Length: 114
Length: 110
Image (cartoon, rainbow over all chains, first blue to last red):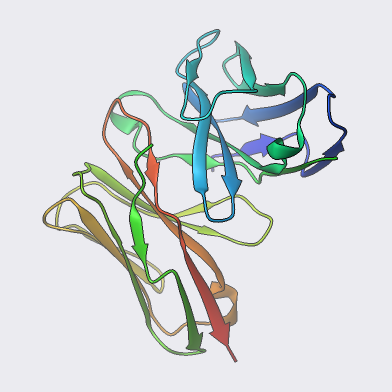
């Protein structure tokens, strides 16, 4: 079974803090993604990566950065957290190539910025 | 970014009833996926569809890939309380990002 894990289920941070969200997948997937999910706005893509040390901006990258130093790990960084970044953050992974059509999600991290 | 349309937005049904929901797009996709999300959890993949016209089942769930490649349908038979949650569809074309629907919220009344 594909397993995508996220380092924290719940996080509470203060405005201006630097926040790290970690995601690890154990299926040797090349592709990894970070989304945020907000009521009424659905899933929005923040950043994605198709390979180690490679990153691409998604639809809403402002205020975020990412790091992919190892194939299995994809980190989302909030350099200076703000209250409008309070959200549910979901990590996902998928294979590359012909099998890239199925995306698997982690359990999510609910981040609250005070 | 592009988003899919899902209907209904929400539905309340009696336990034991069958459920139908659909997902539509203005663009064609080569893959349709259906996920279920429980409160406070990440989406869990239910069914993946890879061919236009394909009908695939997973237990009480059946999903179809529309002939036009612009829509997909999910049916749940004989609903039970644990079917409660939000059902998302997603469309995908090779080399492009996944596109998600806003979800259908299902409530099952005992």
